[in-house]
Image (cartoon, rainbow, N blue to C red):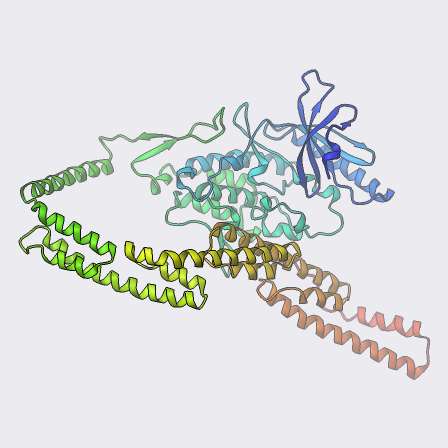
Length: 596
């Protein structure tokens, strides 16, 4: 759809050479400035136009000019792309911005929960301070970015600084009258970073702070926002575990940045910066005691955060002194152990007997293995090990036999997941593993087929915006199937989309009820599935709107009766009836909605 733009020259100056992709509010391209002697690259954004009506275009034109003036001011900051030009051509609106040479922050964040790539607390604090300074300036200009995420933070090649790109401040240019964020147009990469209030048109400056906090958590844990769990009653994000290398002080700061209720978060970027500056010098001691980490500013070349571990004073460190004592004690123990081995080494035949017994056991001859183990004399150093091994073998063999029998029964009944669960619990004995291989292989083929079937159905339902059914199919995928991480990712994604959709339906119901269109309001509420968090509230509102619908119907019926009785004109009676309804001072229908 966008290839037709490749090669096109705008304003006789900017030649489109590459498409960067489409967003909520338009298409983005890379161009070259053919009038400039060095032909520098530029970013060109074509804003989406949804109507050709003259009145619409005139309104869009005025708002476009207003918003671009704001962007021009923002470009004065060294970590925000400069706005080079804005123009209208063939009833299309374009922005031309500075092209930032570099890579996105997403390439630096840890993936697959690999602790080797987790950021240190110091690195995260420096990152927060860097971006918060940019956001403080953005918010001071009356602009909310609205889409802070790793892809929109570019590590600039020439100086290693983070640059905030792709401003959502253009959002009002073509947002229309509907206050609800169009969820189906939002890129999947933005889900999880966008806070709840933003989906219902209640965006605040600290909505950007929420997104930044989510990135900090991803840097510390390797988990994307969609992989994080929510508290079932408060909807707060559960992110810190015992293994998370972060002090209580910094963890408290990040947790306050991502509070579910925007009123309970830090209200401004300046508030967070002030708290970060007060981090105790020993805050990191809750994470690292024997050494500390010194970070330079962001690197100049590859953009990745580097750390240099510098030991504390080794002579004065109580912890290291204790480590030295411990090492000395361990050396003594190892020395005594070595003496014991040298002076009381068992005869080769006894070791050989135990080794041979283990081989017999692995091959499936339990009784032969036990007989060999029992042949070891009681005065041998190997004897205690042999006796303990006999008991262990007998216990493991019994478990293996029971689990194998259960797996055979499950296989005969085509209960493929039960086959895998039973065989997974079989002790690691070569004989039993060989017997179960055929069962496991066949069962896994069927489980993978089930997974593919349910996954296909889930994708189809999600494409139809039926996230309730999509989640139903995903939850039927056996845990034993491969690709569990993809399933978990899609579960989180569809749960988020169902949450937003149910909130959208609830909002639409409120809007219709406010207009007195109770049938339409009820129709919206009935679309909210039972497993949605908004279901309880929807049921409450269903009862309310049905009651109000019946009340209005009784008034209309009374008005019709009055009309028939006195024989007056329908228009006169109707006008009086509507006045009475208006004067009832009924409770307002539209309330502020929090995603729950």
